[in-house]
Image (tube, rainbow, N blue to C red):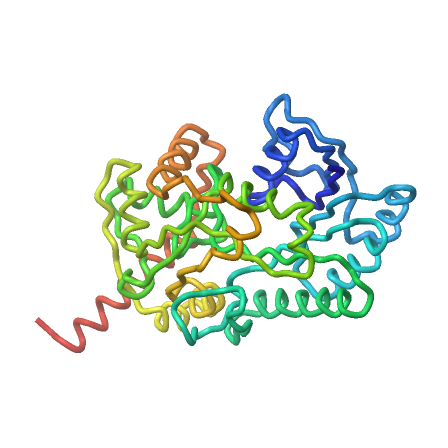
Length: 340
């Protein structure tokens, strides 16, 4: 197959790119070349160094080109979805939009999430924008036959990232460091809500199974693991990979969001809610699909990467100070209500 990926070197897309090339498919990456080092030596793809937001430049690159599949991994707004409909109408047999499982109804009316679960997230603009993009693509399909497929990832990770409930702008390293230093780490709620994390290698298997799949046209499909873990179990797995017993400090999501309003979307709109996914639609479309990497395995690989790559150890004193302030504030509140 002839493939065009917009992006192609991110947390989700790197393993997809590698898998497509291993399958012998003709892959072109359109991006600004900022993360090309994620592709290992020997994994080669044609590169178009361009900004997808420069519509005229991309249109010039597309002259005389057609693709079996176009997938955009960096499409976040309705305007970008409308642009892609203009750019790729008549240029591809399938256009794949990467949405988000955070778009599903909050709060849920049923604990088991299916693709038919309503899309509604009053807490997070990011999710509402993804919903609006899906609506634009659906409308283009109904009116003009634009051949879209929507993929809804949940929390997907790779060796370069590690799923934690709360972190600062520089990623998970500060949480890892606090664990290693024997300091408490923040966990939203009591840590008992269920969460689903999916390794990017498993995600890539499901994704490539949808590529060029006639039965996926006009459909929305989520790709996740069937493993459901509490947040306490997730942190315990990370601690196990570090050979430490993590000190978990539980704080209500309401309190955390009041302290830092930017956490409202990621917490109330996502991580504070239990998520369990029904993957039967994916398994029907991609026979034999199964997520095989348990989180304790994936966590070890990620921890090994962080510990062996100093450049990944990005300290975050702002988030560290926030953590200490929240803990101190909650302890002070407890002392006021129940003085010793």
